[in-house]
Image (cartoon, rainbow, N blue to C red; front, side, top):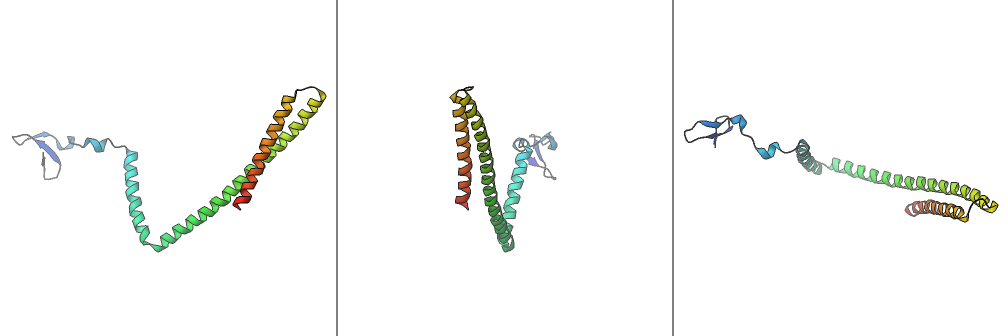
Length: 143
């Protein structure tokens, strides 16, 4: 294999004439790499170059630290809000379970339903009340 003046590889026979046109020669491994993988490689290289530049700049490091601190603070607040909202939802469901328990108990007293429905209503109400209360306990512990 030799190199032409324009640096395209060609395959030549013993007599010196080209057997394969320069345009036909290609590297199989490179052509089979997906576009996504190529983009990933480019992104990694660009990230490393940007990271090296960022390490040199005190301003960028300070801004990065500020963004991290702010994000961490917002994350804590959002987690606390999440616990409070889920606690409220669970307690509201326990309240609905309590209403259902009262109806089922009245039906049980009248002899129209068995005790199984009352037991299920009790289990539902107690379980969701427990979930709601423990959610608020977690908020108190984190605060």
